[in-house]
Image (tube, rainbow, N blue to C red; front, side, top):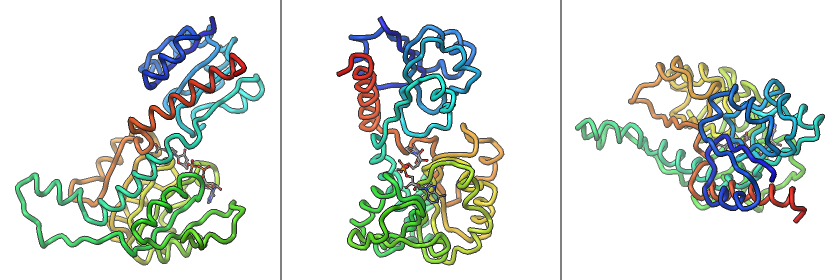
Length: 309
Ligand SMILES: NC(=O)c1ccc[n+]([C@@H]2O[C@H](COP(=O)([O-])OP(=O)(O)OC[C@H]3O[C@@H](n4cnc5c(N)ncnc54)[C@H](O)[C@@H]3O)[C@@H](O)[C@H]2O)c1
């Protein structure tokens, strides 16, 4: 019987499905112990990971039988794709299965930060009553700048349309030139910096996108926008982000992804509860619904691959 090693959490219904046809080793903490993964990976045909398990060539060299890597998500930053290609190991990502959860996270963060909910919440809990001292805004009619207009960027624009938002998108790799019927204006990065009230990043992390948003970008932001990054850490320079907030170049930020994860203490030391910010531990794409979709999608792909269905 073919063996599967699952190194991070997976929805139980999908594990049950796989259990009927494969021998399963499920340990959602094993990603912390690369020595143990090295030992286990030797005898498995499939490994299922999220983004924490490091499948670099040092580990993959032990994977003598490995034919399939199931990635419960979409990013491939933790997998040596060249090694897999050379060694005929198929990598399957769960394209689109968590996109709705990320898009909802962006709208949620936009609404919360415009209304200053983080600060109002912490001060009300402290016994204060800042009813008139903190002003806040509606989302309706604001300009949303979406940087990276792929699957998630499009879903964000679609949800934002319900709030009659002006959607701007920057993505030089798009084939379309006119998306005005969907209320989306394609534009330049600088125009987004100049005119957006909310800027949301939906890019892959590459040499081109590393530090794409840095101090030079923040000085161009005229409307003191809210910044949201639910894509990959390192695309926004974290030090420059905090400085931009302290200099009042931006009015808030929601960050789900960090230069290193878990987030560094040195970054957290710069945050205080009075800031208009939301920090979350890389969960934008994780809801019960998306976990079920992602897990079942990968389980079905594995069954199809080994049983030619
Ligand atoms: N936080 C989470 O839980 C979570 C969950 C899912 C996805 N993600 C991340 O969200 C990001 C977007 O995912 P997606 O599914 O929309 O990807 P996608 O590939 O569908 O879209 C990315 C878009 O970015 C564009 N792009 C690439 N380089 C660019 C550049 N230099 N400038 C402007 N545009 C550029 C591409 O043309 C593409 O349209 C990815 O980094 C993904 O890993 C995060």
